[in-house]
Length: 221
Length: 154
Image (cartoon, rainbow over the protein chains, first blue to last red):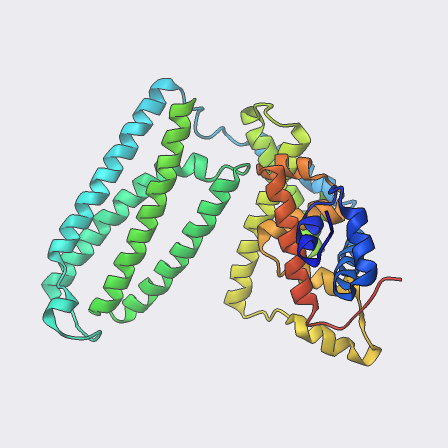
């Protein structure tokens, strides 16, 4: 089969592709493919120079010292056994239920901006604010419980999935912190409160997703 | 390990911190190691995840202290007086702008010489995904380096 420019990407993606010889023959007559292959090779040559070696005589003593400190620390949470994992599933279910109830209550208590026809400057009354804050506190409690339940798996250093969830949760927490700071100077602003609620919902959803993953992997064991 | 961490983080001191933190995590998690992969594979995986976390933490601090990150284009301008930047330096800077997953694949394959099957085991991805990730990384580097004048390797 004749090699064409359109075949080049699949060749570049696979260094073991048997069509490399045909690609090089084609590149001799095709300046675009020649340039492309040359760049690819130059990149590999330059990348090899990025391998670093430097002396750090203080690093190993530092690591040893931190391991010694770790060894003398009291052991944390015990390893989870079968009955504990049943208890854990119960706790996840209870937390999810509590979070769902808190959100429904919050929804009913919320003075909806759309229905009042007023814009983003809408302010909450003192009593509505008290109710919203109480409901938010319940919601936060339930999320904290959920966080505790998934903490072990979430902080697992060897799980790429956990790292990705940690990243997402950090971004959500950053957004919540920013909103809370704004709310501190503008406590009655309904728009800020709505935004914070959305952020909490996003966090709850993310935690639920991860809890679901934890449950599925425990069931699979 | 230091070399991988350096190319993931772009800073020697951060790389050393990442190696230290990775060893601590290995120590804490050793009882959970089930032998499904080699020990070295498992340690590299922990190191890479530590680098992701550390980089994210550093980025947050940098954002909070408004520590400026030199734009890639400035590298070309700064080097214009010397005609061009060696590709190696431009590449070092461009790598740090890659998506973290693509960056790890590029560093492990092109810099450290791991095979795609080894990378697949470290990152827990299929070998084909590693190959495609490397292709994507190189395409992105091609785009980034297109904005910089660099000197070809001799």
